[in-house]
Amino acid sequence: MADANIRIPEEAKDRLAAIAASEGLSLRAYLARLAETLLTPAERAERAERARAALRAWNGYAPTAAEQQELDSELDRRLREARPR
Image 1 (cartoon, rainbow, N blue to C red):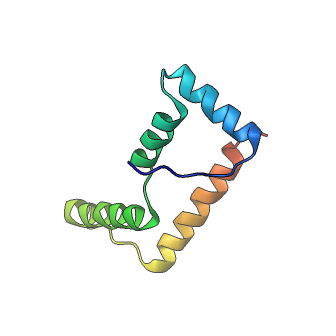
Image 2 (image 1 turned 90 degrees about the horizontal axis):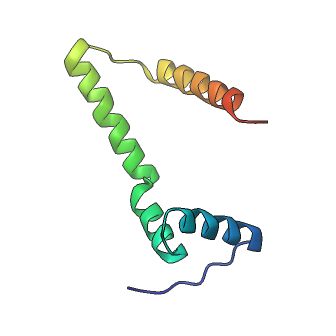
């Protein structure tokens, strides 16, 4: 296993360490688990395409690029509204 030095603000490190400790993990183990669970942009795109293919096969749903952009914009708007202030 390779070590890496990452420079982040002390407050961020302390927050991550507290979250890790609350789950019974070291900061190193927590970050390794986090890295395993997050998707890269390419992985997200692949999942999205598989979902679109499944919907096409299941019920013929095949939005155009413009419809997809409109739906993405609506989702972004709703996510902004749902964020705590």
